[in-house]
Length: 228
Image 1 (tube, helix red, strand yellow):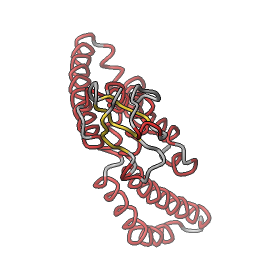
Image 2 (tube, rainbow, N blue to C red):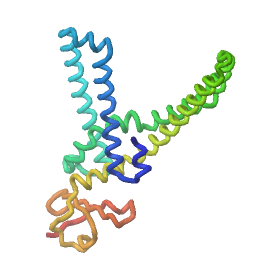
Image 3 (tube, rainbow, N blue to C red):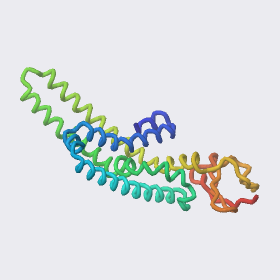
Image 4 (cartoon, rainbow, N blue to C red):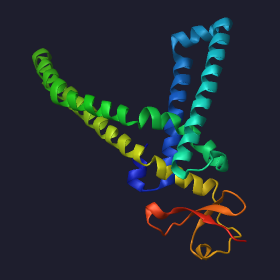
């Protein structure tokens, strides 16, 4: 899913991919709970089901607190303003806590990359020799297994590199979400800068944060005085 951003260059595809990614763990847990023998035994016992429900509620509460705290910190890091000034942005990026901290994290992606490289360079040749020795005359099946292993290793390595790149676009994604959700296309400011293409976020009655899309990246976000 994160590859959508690099193949299309569209920030909205990237946002959709990240939302699906952050919902995926919950979906897999529910799917496992519905089909596993352990999940069925819990549902069959009302006492166990009640206990699991309470624990799950506590987990969701703690997850929301940690996610919202992360979202507020990310907004403050990008815009250097009170996160309460961008309420919709905070709500929209809150679910991204899991992807950016546990999937697109440098430590996680580097670990996956190192393991995949070791698998390709060390374990794969040894496994190939083992398959040849124990494969007998079924060399076609042996070769197919080895090819699938190398393909899986390559895909894992490529995914890890994509995860690293997606993590670097966190600030850009937050800015685009804020521009869509909390910045205004029109304002009552009559200053010289207001004649340029811009979007504004009101910090007070006379002070605004302005996004200039035509400026170089370091100068796009500026604090300006607003004169009605």
